[in-house]
Each structure stands twice: as C-alpha cells, then as structure tokens.
Image (cartoon, rainbow, N blue to C red; front, side, top):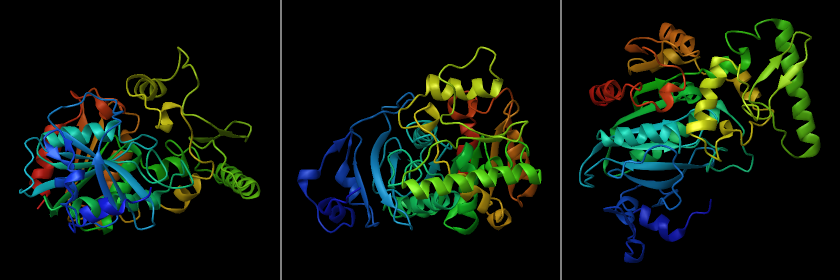
Length: 380
C-alpha cells in the first residue's frame, strides 16, 4: 500500500479539502478521516463491497488501512454505530478471525452487528492475508497476528470519536489466542471475547487433541518443516501446503494444498461438513484461503511451534475474559482448557445445539446480547 499524502494530511487534521468530502451514506469520509490522530493510516469509501453476509444499510462502513509495529499494512473495515454522531465518544471493538478467513466473512458480521448495538467496530485481515500487506502471502504468524490486534487498537484508539479507555477485542476461531495474547500485555484492551476458539499453537504443534504428542511424530513433522524451508531457500519462492500437517500409520507426512477436496464426499465427517458448509457454501469468498482459494505457506507451522499463545494468559487478569463455544462444537475443548488456565474474572458460555461454524454466522446461535452486556459492563 502507498499512503496518499493528501489523505494522510487529512488524517492528521492538518488540512481539509472539500474535493475529498465524499459521502458514504450520511457520513462524509472527511469527517471520519479528519478525526484520526494516527499518521500512517487511511480511510476511504468502501467501493467494491464483497461482504458475504446480509448487509445492514443503517450501518456505515469504511475501508481503512493502518501500519503495525513491524511495518505491515493492515486492511480493515471500520463500522460506525447507527445514528453516528462524531461529537460523541464511543466504546470500540477490534475483531479478527477465523484463521484463514477474511474481514468480509465472520469478523465483519460481528462488527456490523455490534455497531448496530452502539460500538465503533473494526474487522481486519491479519498481515499477509486478505487485503493486508506483505510481499510474502498467506504466511501465518502468531507473533505478527498478535501485533495486528495492538495495531488495530492504535488505529481505533486514535479516532476522536472513540474513548481510548473503552476498547475491547474479539477473536473468532483461530484468532482467539492472538486476541488473548495481545490483551495479556497491551493494557489498552480492557476486555476480551473469544468465539468458537481454536488455540492455533496447540492445534498446529500438537494437532487435534494431541495427535503429535509422541516424540517420533513430532520429529517427523520437524524434519518435514526443515525440508520445506530449505526448498524455499533454494528456489526463492514459497511452497504451499500447510493447512494441516499429519502423520499417517506408516510415518509419512501428509499435507493439504487446500482446506477441502474439490468435492466433499457424501460420507465426510461432521467437522468437514461444518466447515465446508460455511467456507464453500454460504460464505464463499475468493480472498479466503479456507474457501479453497489457496493454502498457508508450508513453513507457517514454525511460528506456532516456537510461540505458545497461552504462555502469558494469567497476565490478562484483572481484565475480564468471555469464552463462547457450542455444546456440539468439536473445538469446545480449546475453550474449556483456556477457561481452566485463565484467572478470574472469566466466563464460559456454552451455546446449546451450536456447532463450531454455527458461531461464525448463525444469528440465532451467536449470543450477541451477552457480548453486548459484557462489553458495556467491562469497558471502563
């Protein structure tokens, strides 16, 4: 991304040009732009709207860019509350996930719904994914993704119509651990909600419920990662195929270049059907890796072997944590484990009848009333 000097000047409040006073619904872009004190950022109208959920016409949304501490440009959608008044000071939420999804999917739906309920919200693509920057594409990094949450706070906390002391974070699925980790040390985040949590360090380094726990299996995976790094170093190009690493009965490594096969078998397991129904079915998006458009870089797993997201979880206290899961979610054990490890105040919300992917977009299953009350109570 190249920052437009004119837009940057408007952002810092240095000048105002009527020529860029573009209307987005009832709110001029310049009103939002001039309200930001973050220099390396931009706001513009959302011209190519590819969101995959039902759009609420009462909620204004803008495309934004801001820079994280490592120099990556992070792309987001900024949602303004209904009946927005730039003279007010609003509570704000930064939102990302799931892992391999984009802001036009679940995180955007959460952002829109919570803007309807009175919050300024920001759904963003983690670095190197979606519309966010990075010459290396589709590289997952727990450290950089954690930083992206803090960079989102940099941006939203410098909007003049946001109270910087009333900012919360929401992590969905595989970005949940990064949201908690960011908040553990970034005290500007006053409260955290996770939904359909996946601890990606646990999932990638130990696989589902510990399938890599043996020394032999872990050694096979590490050897494979070393080979992939060497191949990439020699070729100078990235190698795809790291959505999931597995070891078969013969000790052979298994990798997957896309999330799903081209056609899901009729006898596919319930977990695959749950994900497939969302990413390939009702919420397909061409920039989402999980929609079978790509795969994580083959060396992505290194970061998750090296960086345990829950190491500092007790540092979150006394800021509150709410973990939302479903009683039919295959991922429920991640939320259960975090709930056991986290210090008070904490709350575990189990939604009856909800699968993992139900909590991505099923409005009758996502407990938005509880989320709203949680943040209204704890953002202070």
